[in-house]
Length: 384
Image 1 (cartoon, rainbow, N blue to C red):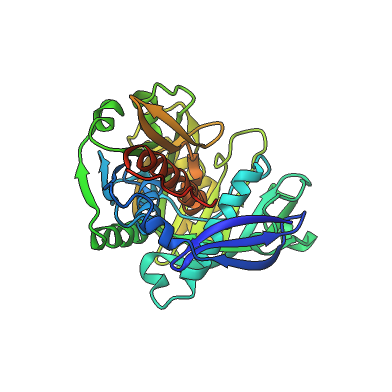
Image 2: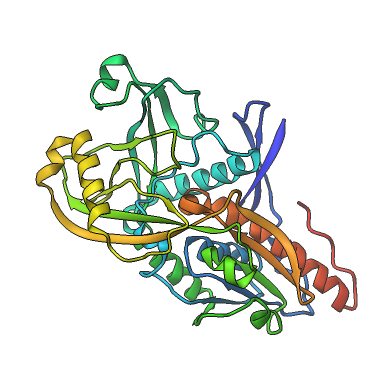
């Protein structure tokens, strides 16, 4: 039996799971007061670098757990001009190459969004449930996250015949989160808590390290310049949004000889349907390409012919911050604790809350360490 922490307003909740990851029971321990008093003589100044879904959710987790901290979010762009604003917002990770840590972050995110889904304002923040298909040209293993989403099952032979060129697949129900609505909501919540926002581009983390006690780095693709992390690469995508209210299920096709999201996908949103199928690694072009638009249209219409007459209502191009593995760890830059939380690729929405919770744990520990050095008494260590 293992325990996986997640935060609630009343404290830190531990979800116990058996050896195969099934939820067994809930155990809740109230440690909110610890966060409120971790360094009473010291007012911590914390900065989050990055204004996307990972940055804003990290800021909210830190502020809710450490409300005395003075928190600022610094970013070159905020909503509606982030990569997440253009994403379709399906909560689904990589098919198989998922670590146990990433499964935990996925579970935390899914649990958090499931609670929000039950509120009366869920649709206002772009959150809803949707069922749909993942299809393949051959039989494949089940994904390691099949017990996190709802209703996972294999397609029947008759179902698979609906999709030209594909013979195998899964049907699942998952959550959807449209950042065009979610990010403004996060922004408002942060402002209500006194969090400051600064829109500016920084050249290196050392620019902010001298002014803050703790830095939370959610810089995404900018890690190439801020940290010289050449393992971060752009994954260029294009999306065509159409008015097609008759499309009720998502459809993700998979070409296993290429990278993820490089074959046709059709994902209905609250008001429009997103059509895509490009993940061009190493391509920095944010301009619109007619040839790529044609590829998207051809792939979508082949799968669902009725889309041929759909009216275009929007077009989007963006660069996903692709990295072999998400970087979520504590580091030190110019003697300042830095919590890195970047490299989510096309899965920022999928992992955002789980990664934010983990970043908050690391940030609280860093603040504990600083307070212990600067206070006249030793601060109790964090209990996680």
